[in-house]
Length: 342
Image (cartoon, rainbow, N blue to C red; front, side, top):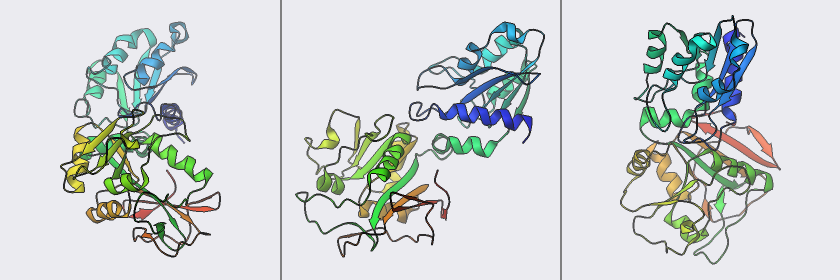
């Protein structure tokens, strides 16, 4: 591991502390390091609309700690160069570079936002500050895969999630909402589901699931914000006294979209950078057919056989799960391949 990688990993650790609260902004961490290797300032983006990581880091620095030494500022994402809810971080770094001895900035990756896209680096270099970009780039991009997806593909990062029985059903036989859905998850895997809810800006279901299950779609088994609830209801079938319209969280209803491509594009236009799909088999199969999805989480209860009901989407699962939680098997698939849990 190089010295730059060492401090960039610290930036990534700090950035993760902002998870669940900074969306649709990216998670970012920053570290100021003296020439002798001593860290003299740290910061991370803590909540949407709040100070960026660089601001928090430089606030944390005692100017006396920099006396007579050059320093390097490490940041997991290129410093911003535009006015948004906060001033440009690149300008702040330049304005304090002499006071804090900042001679070099190391960025994990460039910012894909068209309002930045290399301009932050240009500002720093124009001020005589050396800039190195691309240190642990893949790790930095992975951390903010949802942010990058919205900026580069102009749509949210789409995660599909469902639980199924050993014989391949997501629910038992039901014809209406009077009978409760079959419970397949356990107490531990429910926590992981709510962790996914906290990690994504929105959670989406179709009208069929809303009518049959009447879910609240809250984040109650994990720390974090409630996601925006999105309902696909082309025919306006779901009554407004159903739980999805409760005042606990925002709800968006898509009435006019005729296919998934239109729906996901509409969500991207509203600034939603990620959506967790917890819909029924019809919606999941439709999305799978379009190919417009990024990640899939499948939970299998190996001891439960329903013998009939609603079939799970027909996807191939690898011989071995990525994890076993409370006796249930967890699988993940991303972009056509299987891998470890994110």
